[in-house]
Image 1: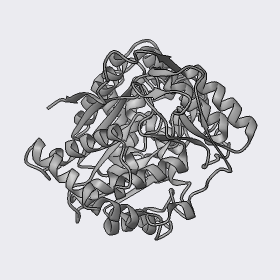
Image 2: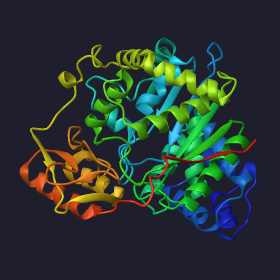
Image 3: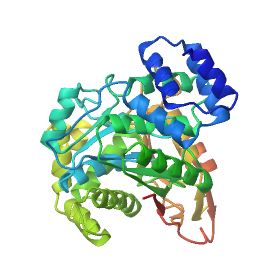
Image 4: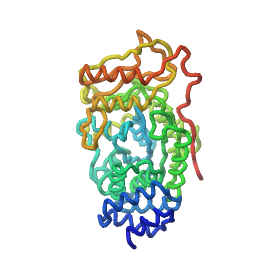
Length: 438
């Protein structure tokens, strides 16, 4: 086989067989295929798409390009993946919550992409926490804590690492088959028994329209099941910040408050519990939806999930007293100021994407892969649609490094938030749909 003939076939709307895809992925992993050929392949797929069978074959080939973890001596191994959003710190709460319910969670997470925040960037705000451990440390952390949230290691799905890096600079990131294969190859390599997808919908989501999000969710569920990984998807609202904070260290603070019961945001709690209950059902750890919900609520309220989080942080090199003294360990900004809107009334809508870009502007995200992130900056006490703003009630507190950054953030907030006297016509549900294909 020749790489250029495989590219030509896909360019001309042909359907690749599993052997052709495996050959290309093997060459991609070994470096026998040039960057130009990889870019041409990605562009051909971007324009011509892939059948379900092709996408399954690509997913399996990329998962097989490196080490595939095995957890034969442990109970059900599960995970969740989110398509990303503003203030989405669900993973920090969900992984230890599932561990407290008897599941094991080797969660392979990512960094911020575009305007959305990344779980690994949040965890990097914890001093000493190792988001890139070797496989033995990962295995040890999962066995000791029941969960470990880390980044993709060099051993897991290396073909995906190379393909994604080239997609990122060739305007082919948005290809649904390539998105699906990228996400699921890492999950298959992690050795999962079940996966739930949190597909975000709204102005702060990667895919803002419900139809787009539904199409991606269906592709993910069908391909995962076709590759032998039981999967369901929840479509959840991302039309405004999820929780009351956005920004790396601030979101870790909020996650700790959720786990300890110090403070809980209702929409964040609902998304987390819904995802957790779905996974307990899939893993056979609950007999029905009511029992699953009761079990995850009990694990959260009892402090068992908080204890698992503390174990995970310590196992991966973080401070042993993070739960008790988060302010001692997490970075903070000297400039912290409430921002009031120019018009009093009810918040009708928020451009959540603009809030994400605001945080990048403060230094809390990247405009270039080599950029250093300021983990302390961001927003806290963020309001949502239906909340009242006036001279006494600010929209949010901005955490910035300078007065100039604070002023720029205030201008961006003013432009992003629509205020009326009536507010939104109805309150949006946070869990919009559940998709399961049996």
